[in-house]
Amino acid sequence: MKATATLNLKEVPATLRVNGTIMTYSENDKVEIKKAVPQGINPTILLLDLKIIEKSGPMKGTDKPFQYESSEKGVEKFKQVTILQETKVLITVNVEVMG
Image 1: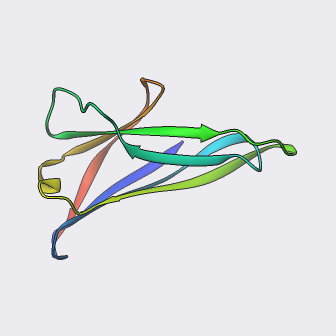
Image 2: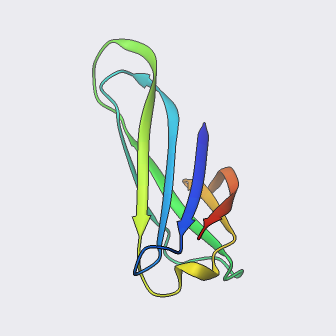
C-alpha cells in the first residue's frame, strides 16, 4: 500500500487530499475510503477507514487507486493521516503542506 497526504493552504477553503493505491486480489474489486467515526484521541491525526468491496472476477493482484478529499473547517490542524482497515492500521503518512 502506498499513500500521500497534501494540505493546500493556497486554496480557499484549505483542502486536504489523500491519494494512494492498495493491491486487491481480483481486478474487479472496488475500494472506498471515508473519514473514520469516531476519530482517535489525537486531534492532529486524521483517521480514515478503507474498505475493499470484493467482486467476482479474474484473480489477479491489481493496484486499485483511492482518494479522499476534505475542505471542512479545521483541516489545517492535521499533521498525519492514518488509514485503517477494520480497525487495523495499514499506514500512517505525514501531511505535506503547500502554501
